[in-house]
Image (cartoon, rainbow, N blue to C red; front, side):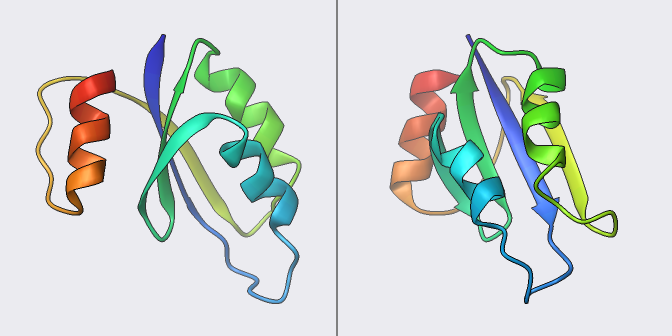
Length: 87
């Protein structure tokens, strides 16, 4: 199993992105910021990418990046705890 960073920039606020967010939220995840999640999965980045890319506009941005130790960050304690437990 791996922790993947899913980070994105959805450029059309009027567009319905619920399908995009539903894909992410179906994984064991934690929201790190307004436009980034960490997900815990055994699926490769390419599979996650294929699931998400069909739900966004061609002007949007999407990156899926494996997370590894060491890491540094500042935010809510639950995020730190989640990362400590799963990385």
